[in-house]
Amino acid sequence: MRIKWRCLLSMIIGTLACPAQTSLSSVKRCCSQRSPVTDVLAGYSLIHLNSRGEVLDFATYEDTTKTYGSPRFTFVVIGLSQVQLKFLNPKPD
Picture (tube, one colour):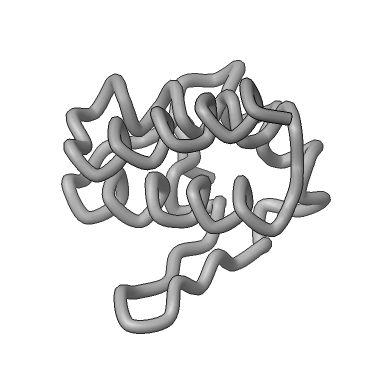
């Protein structure tokens, strides 16, 4: 349990620093192990990627869409913003 919290803490600190690669790797990690905490971290990272006009890579977008069930899945971080997965599609329709 201690290792899991250390990993989550390092993800939070890395996400707050928020360079694009850190946000992308946070999304990848959060999608592999869903929980309320990782959902918030993924939402936070996706909102920051979207605010910088970045998109996910193809593999991460596919994994994220499978994990959350739909490209219309909306992440809402209260007090910050919201974003739908389809806004981060590497190949817009």
